[in-house]
Length: 330
Length: 162
Image 1 (tube, chains in turn blue, yellow):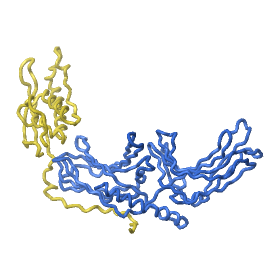
Image 2 (spheres, chains in turn brown, yellow; image 1 turned 90 degrees about the horizontal axis):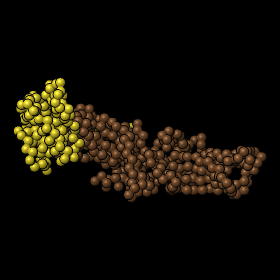
Image 3 (cartoon, chains in turn red, green; image 1 turned 135 degrees about the vertical axis):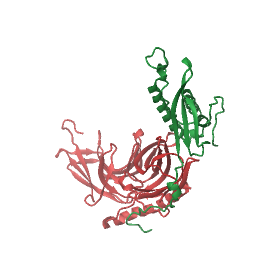
Image 4 (cartoon, helix red, strand yellow; image 1 turned 120 degrees about the horizontal axis):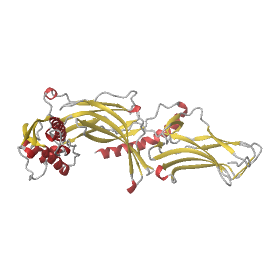
């Protein structure tokens, strides 16, 4: 910051080398707006240039060093002071000295590990960004550039259906079935509800998608539930023997992949909630967890090698998750 | 594993429904009528009773068709029993109308026809809402209220099902 025009200041600009070709993805900001950011996958190289433009050409800029960092961090809203960095890389661009004119510095973070997907939620945020800093005696000059990371999976080998009989003794027995337990973000939930016993007066039935964001550990665990979707599947009273089909397209809803115990800081899990409502507005419901995962798009040749590395790293982890899910649903 | 190009949205296979299930009477038939208000007694000891007729095919009710006479304080008794013993949120009863019981009113007070009708409707709504609740159906007090001639206020509260 320059006071009354004395001293020298500079503007920093970070530009990626592949800014022309790299895809951008939409991501929600903390205040709910949607912005577009460059999209990266795990293992991809992040390279570009840092342009330092002197505000008063002619004056020198004294500094204690210029560097660029690549940071992946988790920020809990109730504890803003503490950022939990799980990726922290730094490249020095210039040793302490002075700049007599505007200058451009190249940087490259090779094959950067980006283990988690970018996430902006109700109580927690996970973000990746580049930060270029000119260190000075009184105040540093810095510029940040956020990027978005998606984690990809392939079709899991084990994907059993969910089938269960539930009810209230002597009043209501249903058998529900969903065709899979793991769905990708543009998948379709196909299922059915079969009525074995109906001794209550049902008015209608709906299926809700509930997102549960869990932050904190031990005694201070906090769950934030959010109903992402409500979809009516039956209007009117069923009798014994009726089968009601379910066909719910996920692409229309704002969903993220299931995120389990990310860096031991937070989880994002999804549940299907089957709700029956009777004539007196009483609600009967059954909640069931589903695993959501992100399927890779058809990859362009220019990036195929890097994205293939990224998705291969996740076939292993999705299989482990599949075995875990099967154990839990028993 | 081969990746399908188009999502498979075919319905899951389901058992065909038995036609007698499809077209037979539903298993959830429960209708309770509150009607025929009669004022009994004389002078200050008068009170109104209503006929409470229950028609049902739910197996939990011993009688498929039963009829009893009840007064407002019997409904209050039932509400209190359910609030104490069951975990349900009991719907409200129509008002107690204490003001109507004060002297020097211009009208018939609690024996006013329009008031009795209003109360009858409220009591009918109340009993139908309560009787349809799976947890209330478990309580002995409900069955005694609907299907026994007199309410034994010294009964032993309890559940009907295990």
